[in-house]
Length: 228
Image (cartoon, rainbow, N blue to C red):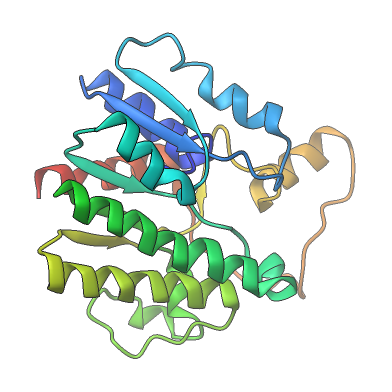
């Protein structure tokens, strides 16, 4: 699993290990936030006998596969360059990691003959009204490079599912929050600012609202495809 030291993936891994699964996690420790914070998320799993951690990028999957001859039942692909604002400032890096990287994971899955499970994002809905936030809605309207890469990943996965008989499931998360949340996300920032007696920074006029999903509920949803 790529993005192993991330918020969602580290919580998911603990659930998988608790349920008796053997887990191999992959992460390249990008500098989006400090490495030491990511390493803390790995600490709870490090001594588990069913856990292996591999430090590397998606590009290294091919050579790693060649030398280790792994046998996997499923892939949880949670790797991505995150956030809307950085994607606007540097869109090419998002397309490289989020789209090309996903194709590399799918190639790995195809070569291994395994199922592929994938995390997408609610951002693919873009400017659609909330009443249109439905899996069967086809007129999606992403409004940022980040959202466009997430939708592109879904399309790449659909192609592989048609050509190579992979089970590809896109899970569109709605702003996950809870312990280990990334430090740049709103709830984490709000709590830190409150603790430090600082003013809370709110973008816009304060009238906007947003759906959030607790991490344990999100992991429950991610686990469902294993029985699909």
